[in-house]
Image (cartoon, rainbow, N blue to C red; front, side):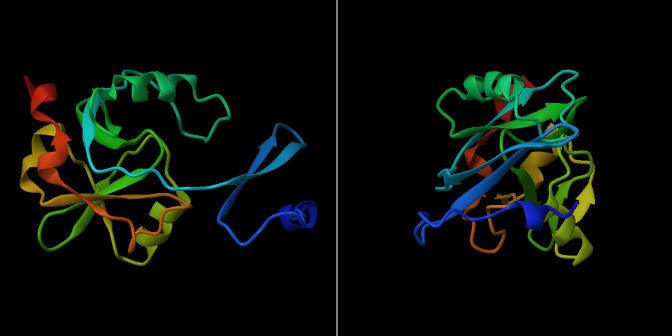
Length: 166
């Protein structure tokens, strides 16, 4: 089965940016097209995820939404599992140390854009603890809909990690 054979972009869509969501089990159950506008993320708050397993992208985002609700005044959360930074509620993340872009070695979800940037040698996976964050200059988010090169950077001072370390 070739996915592109099953997808037909609705003729009613205009030239705006859309995301395509494919819901499936053993078979494709539903294909949805939805207008897409990237979130404006300028600040992050660290939250502990416990034993959350999100190896695959699930339609049920209840656990991620509960973590997102803990963001307080921040725009999104930066998740931590077993002391290591993983990703945000909807995107992978990379941190710039002044010379290199590093991405958490063990994200909750190994995104396709992240995998491509690693394969190209543009970002490097590394274990990054919450304690390590202060050595970075900034962060940048990425996912299938967020181009790494054009996504705004997040100043490291806009990441509320000091509350997490207390």
